Length: 400
Image (spheres, rainbow, N blue to C red):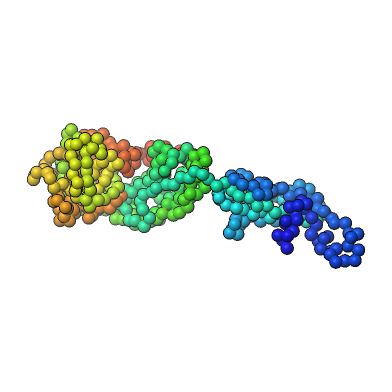
């Protein structure tokens, strides 16, 4: 009955339901004059409209009357929440509509004489032609080190950084403040003020679906990514002393002899984070600007520190006595190993006892500090500098 009445209302604007029903089948019905409600319901967008934007278009109003009820639902019957104005002359949704979705609106009103009116409309929201997604690290379900920085790389440039940043939130248990920092238009990193506490459970929420990241370009992701912070381990590379000292919970766990970058190619100074681990990998000087100086197809126990090619890795080709005595590499930090790798070597031990997200700090290398966007180099920025890279205005932070 409601659908039939609504369809009729769409043709004549408004009818009195009770008056028509009372006259059905009665003697002399042709002498009854239908009482038409003066209430006129206006639904925006129009019935059968297409390509309706998700924001600010849907509204229901009434002239010469008051709204009694407004029902809005998507194609699966999921209702859209809304609020009725105090004077009951208008209704607006409280949230954003979804794109690529058909919505049904049924509105009801009465005029000053209590005569009822109804109106029905169906419209479809915009179907985006261009979409963007974010590729993120770490992976869902992973256990990572206390220095992990969340990184989201977008497949398209983002111009409305604030809208995208607001759609990506991070919650931690135990609770800790997390701030975002943009590196250009395609990369957003998130981290706390200090390293994560061991055992923290972190959930990143990507609510990018229907967010307009650039003109006419909309996000499609709506998911949660949960990972766990493992034990607290950090390593310090002293390039002058040719050592790597591993600490667990702040206590020295083991010290290993290393060979860092040579005076001609020193290792970056500063804090880096293990981003990837490879049991074996190829290292070719041409890929990092060193031409044909080296091409080693089977480097064992390699752990990436920077996007530009700095690794902790096993080294089986250096002469005996190199490790702990001299710096000979092109910027990487090498540890003694054998061809094919072995867990009992220094490199093998470090590989097995390291997690993606573990911090590695290099001191006394006499080189510049690694750039904040070179791998997970964001720990080299103060908290003030880090928060300055956010697109969302925040209260002033006094601490650095």
